[in-house]
Image 1 (tube, rainbow, N blue to C red):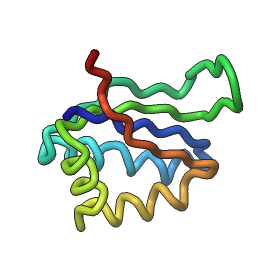
Image 2: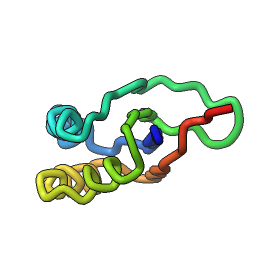
Image 3: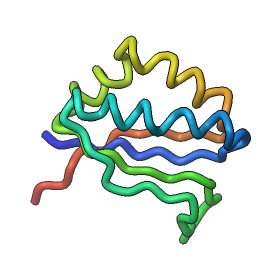
Image 4: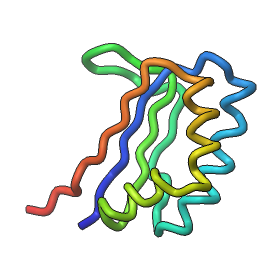
Length: 97
């Protein structure tokens, strides 16, 4: 079942963070994933807005978790952890009526 990885966070070091997206995008193909949306200007209708918001579609929850645990992702994750704060990441199953 398709899942969407939804993340939002505040970037505190844009120079460091700029190293993160190219590596992640290169890794997504390995897991059949694709960026659906990515925005530095998302509008919060409710709650506290974050600077960065992104949605990535994965073919399954297993693929999403494998990508997150991939050894190639770990140095990228370290960059993200140093470059952002207030991070929320969730996996959401696709709605099928």
